[in-house]
Image (cartoon, rainbow, N blue to C red; front, side, top):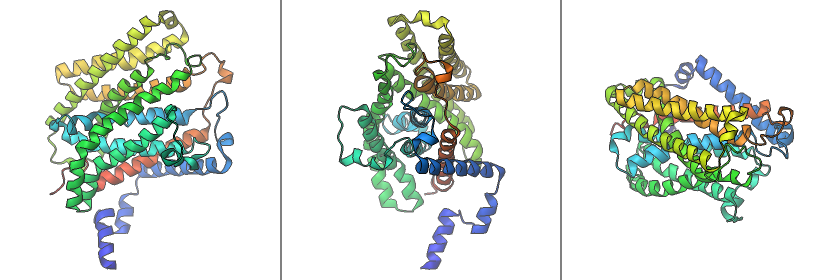
Length: 399
C-alpha cells in the first residue's frame, strides 16, 4: 500500500521524477524571486494578524478602504473575468472553436476569485466572522451582502466548471462525465452571478457622490464596471495566452500556431467591440452630466489619459489588427487594455476618492500592504503553475 501511495505521489505530484530531481529542476532564478516575494508576503500576513489593521496599514476614517480593496478586489475580480467571457462563449453559446481558451479561462477565474477572497480576509477587522454571511446574517439591503454571497456562489460555479480537468487527472471517468454535464448549467447560473457582482462592485461607490471626483462618479458606475469587466476578461485571455504559450511551450508542441493566431484575432475583435461601447457610454455620461469643464484640470488630464490612452487607442489598435490579421498587435493591445482596467479601478477607488484633499492628507499604502498583495499574487502564480503542469488545461488529455 505504501509503495502504491509513493508511486501515485511521484506520478501525479512530482511528474514522474524523484523528489531530489524535482527539487533540482525547480531551483531557478525565477522561482527564487517568486518564493522570496511569497515569503515577504507571508511575513506581512502574519504581521497583520498579530498587530491588527492600524499598525499594518495606512487606513483611517477618511480612507476606510485602501490598496487591498482597490487592487485585490476591484482589480482582481475584474481581471478574473475570463470565465465570464470566454467560458460563457464556449459552454453557453457553442463557440467550440475557442475551446482551447476555455479551460485556462475557467482556471484563471477560479484562482483569481479564491485568492481575491483570501486577500480580503486581511482587510476585514473580524475576518473570522465571514461564515456568518452564509448562514447566520442576512443583510438583503446591503450591496456587500450581495457581493459576498455572489463571490461564494461563483467560486463554487468555477469549481464545477474546473472539475472535469481535476477528475481527468485523478482518472475518475464517471465523476468527470457527471461534472461535464453540469458545466452548461453552471455556466448559465455563472453569467447571472458574475454579471451581478461585477456591476455591484461599481455600485459600492454610488453611496459616495461627494467623495468620488465627478469625472469618475456616475449613476452608470455599475454598467461601467460590468462592461469593463467584459473587455478585461477577454484581454486577460489574450495576455494569459501570450504568457502561458511561452512558459508552457513544452505542453503545446502539437498546437497549430496559425490557428491560435486566428483565434487570438477573433478575441481582439470582441474586445474592440466592448471597448467602443464603453467609450460611447463614457462620452454620453460626460454630455449628460455636463462634465466638460472638468477636462481642463489636472484631474481632467488624468481622466483623458485613462480614456484615450487605455480605451480609444487599444480599440483602434484592435481594429487595425483585425483588418490586417496582425496577431502580435492584438497581444500588445491586450496588455494595454488590461493595464487600463487596473488604472480605472485604482482611479475610482483611490486616486479620485477624496479628490479635494491636499496631497499631504491623501492615502498612500504602507509597505506591508504592498508586500501582502504581492505575496497573494505569488501564491496565485504558484497555484496556477502547479495545476497547469499536472492537468489538461492547455493541452488535450491523452484519453
